[in-house]
Length: 251
Image (cartoon, rainbow, N blue to C red; front, side):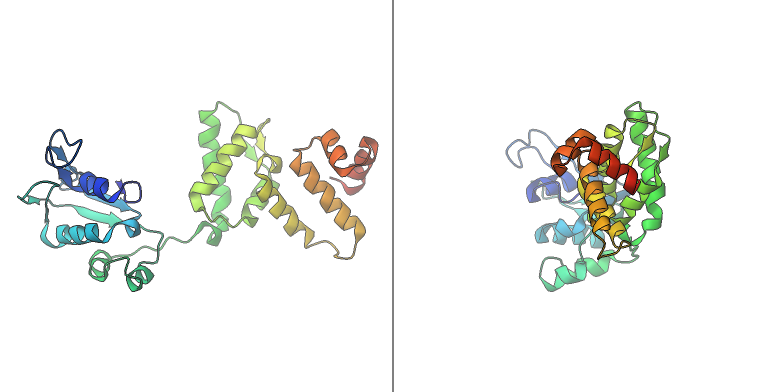
């Protein structure tokens, strides 16, 4: 597997195709590239849309001819590999903007699989959240066995611009913060807690002062992670008044 966005253009070329000793500063000995290592196997090019245009030309040559030139070498090396590529870019738009070769696009797009964004398959969130919870609970030696329904509901209201990677990080953070055997809404980042609370507010009367007060108190409690003394200080009310409001609004 090669992440095409993780290397500079020259390092990526060396990583993909290898180099001869002395080809550039630091090239002390011959090195095989990953295409050669993957001979008679499969190579996965992640973030293909990030690849420089001149490297795209070399990749096209490998696909077309089954051979490539190592950095600093004049004799081609033959190779037989299957290529799987992935990108989060719209390659047709990249072609229009001159960032991606049209001939390479049609050469690699023999078979396409479209993966929907996480926000388009919220039904998967609970399963994925439980999966990552199991992984991180084991890693951190915590006995977390369940996830509160409100936690899942909050996840389902988030936009997930970062897709699976973002969800994984959010769950790892929640497991770190969890104090019991269940993940709670308060273990989530504040922005996800507030978004969930904002959705709840749509169900309340827009003209009810009580509804606004209840929502504001809930936000402050979420912000302080349930610390009632700190919440009372931020709300500028007495602690006894806060306890009465919590009981009144069933918070």
